[in-house]
Image (cartoon, rainbow, N blue to C red):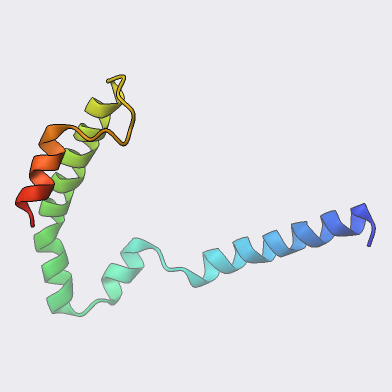
Length: 86
């Protein structure tokens, strides 16, 4: 197989993959609409809690990114929170 045919084949495969991804994988709103009313209500109730957890994690990541420590050297507050959850 020549280089040109290989490039065409790879481009075709990638194009089909992207097309399938956009046609098969539902977006978040569509998935939420397909849930039962009970699950949808639970999702809405827990949305704020998940958002707070996400914001806390992002704040910790931003704080750790400002230090010169390596990424695997976890700060004591993170270790303490992990130990308390056990």
